Length: 439
Image (cartoon, rainbow, N blue to C red):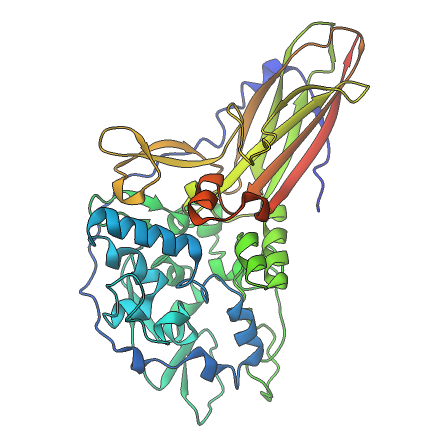
């Protein structure tokens, strides 16, 4: 793990001048207008299992992705069925358009129990779905247009031809816009932005510099790591200067580890550990019994979108602060998980929460009509948090340890799914320590 360096020792008065930096704006409702839904039978698509014979390495990378398991993801399935019941089926086509796109296009859903799904639809976001995409007509809610058939589209300007299919260059496949059709979620009835990963990128310095989603999520390791020389097909005669990886890892350590894809889980953990940096501002000295506020700065240093991003109410990201005296006795703590795995009240928690029509907080996305709370960190920006520490009664040393923690599934969602929260790993994104002298 990388370690944050340099505990800043300076007067607290200067800290408050900086506390406004990195403030986030609430997502606003948007009007959506999508072209008519395409109607494409599932047998128009090639199975990913067919692709593996020539693209074995790419296929193995894809198998461990959230894309490959998008139709079987337990969090998604539980949420889809719950929302379907509560809306009398009105929501059935909303989530499946991106999670089970072939089943949606082929009208194999509803019902949401999956009883009519073809084997092709069960492959989730498959090879042929992406490589027959020829247009993106808007941001969010499956605004993709497909042209299934013999021609496969991709980012190579000079693709090698094969008797099995035609290959054609697609500029779209080199752009972040390609990802926008699903990585932007908008409530279909009221236009509320529920997840804004694409627009977060678009409005950031990553967007203005055209560092695309693919540049970070389809290259080796966290961040932009190029070139990645290799071949795109088994036995291909041409070694290319750069090839795109297809493991497309995000941050879901739990799902990948549970599915048995340990390499993907390790990469997700690396992403989290490279995403943020902590800085700690402490007073140089205190008198006995004198309380103080410590300044914890969290900088989004490695993600091209907010931290956390996506549907943040399904996951946890928070600060753990532990203060001990010179004997190791805990004087103060916040954010330390309880025996039941709960984040205690008063902890600094990052994410977005929503309110229903009555103004009450809801974890049901279909009921959401407005943002209730927005507390996340934009790309290349920071948030300052201030935590009060009680005074030490005698001269000595106060030892401060701060950790930024992440959990792929929240306690509430784990309970709804029948998953023990102990099975969900807590990843230390970053940590930092410092001392205060009391005399």
